[in-house]
Image (tube, helix red, strand yellow):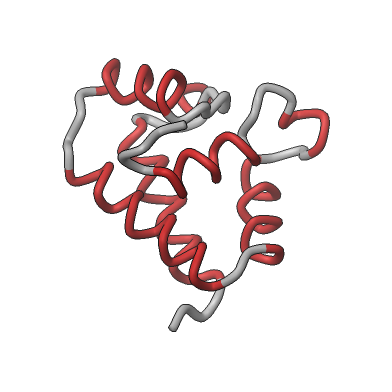
Length: 102
């Protein structure tokens, strides 16, 4: 478990796990499922932790390594996105706009 970003670790580990392609066709389906099944407080916590991670401005290789080794994220975003920062900003925007957070 990642003690620095526990909700983000739970999000990636539970949804973007090694077998995510068995359960979902696209990463967007994963995010939509998370939005539908999660409490607003959890979504807000994931957003805050994503913002914190993005504020660290890790270089690309460090970010890939961190996502895999520390956050258990098995989505290979680099096959579809120019960078991890770009993909994480997208995830953050979808989470912030996908459900009204209080």
